[in-house]
Amino acid sequence: MNKNKILIIDGTFLAYKAFYATLYNSPIQLANSEGKDTNEIVAFFNTLIALLKFHKPSHLFIAFDSEIKTFRHEMFQEYKSTRKKAPSTFYNQLNVIKKLLTYLNIKNLFVNGYEADDIIAKVTKLFQDKSQILIYSGDQDLNQLISDNVSIIKKIKSQNVIINNYNFDNYYEYLPSQVVDYKAIVGDSSDNFKGIPGLGCKTAISLLQEFNSLEEMYDHIEEIESKSVREKLIKYKDKALFDRFLAILNTNFEIDITSLDDISISHINLTDKAINILKEFELQQIKDKLESLITSD
Image 1 (cartoon, rainbow, N blue to C red):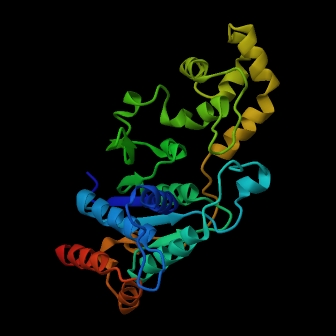
Image 2 (image 1 turned 45 degrees about the vertical axis):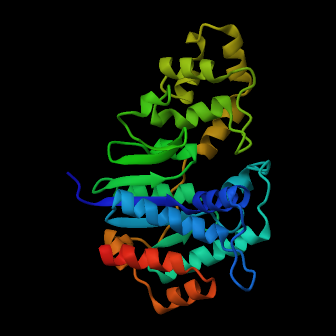
Image 3 (image 1 turned 135 degrees about the horizontal axis):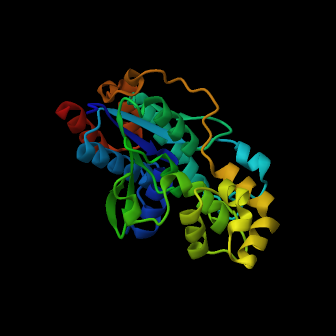
C-alpha cells in the first residue's frame, strides 16, 4: 500500500470559487484598513487549510491556469469564449494568493499555454505509480485521470464526495476513459463545445456502452443501427474528433518538479515574507490557522 498521499488542488477553480462564493453570500465585503479586498484570499486559505486538516496529505501541489491564451485558444478561437471575465479585484487577489503560497513554501505552478488541468495531469502522471493522489477540482475534464490510485474530490448536493474507480459508476454512466468521447458527442457549454447536433446524453451513453470510444464508433459506423445517428456522426466527424482532441489533457511540456520531495508538505513554513503579506492584508486569523497547522504536523 502506498504511504504517500498527494493532494493536488486546482488553484484557479478554488480561487474562482472563493471569490464568487464570498462576493454574493457574505454579508460584508472583506478588506484591510487600506481598502484592499481580501475576501477571495481568506476563503481560498480557509478552504486549503480545511482540506489539509481533513485529508492529512503527505504532499501538496497547487496548479493554476496559464496567464496567457492556451494552445486550445490558439487552435479554437471560440474556446471558453462564453465565459465572462472576472473583475480586476479577482486577479489582484489571485496574485496575492500565488505570492503567499510561494512564500509559505507550498509548491504552485502555472505554465503559459496550458491550463491547470494539464499541469494536474502532468503531476499525476509523474507520481501516480508510487502514491495515492487526491485531486480537488470542479472540472469534469479531470475525471479522465481517475484510476486505482487517483481520486477526485467533488461537491455533490452540497457534500464533498470522493469519486474513484470503485464508485464512478454511481455518478456517471460511462467510464473515466470515455470522458473525452462523451464530451465530444454531447458538447460542453463551459468550453463552448457544441457537440454533435441531435445526439444527446442518452444516445451518447448508449453508443459508448456499445463502442469503447469515438474512434471505434467511426471504425464500425455501419454497425450502428440508427440511420439518423449514423448520418449525424458522419456529418460532424471532423468537429467531434477535433473537440475530443482538445478535451484530452496535455502533458507535453516541462515543469520544475522531479521528485516527491519537491512537493512535500514538510516544507510548509511561515517565512518572514509570508508573515509580511499576512500583516499587510491584516489576515491574522489565517496566520493563526497556518501556525496551528504547521505546529500540529
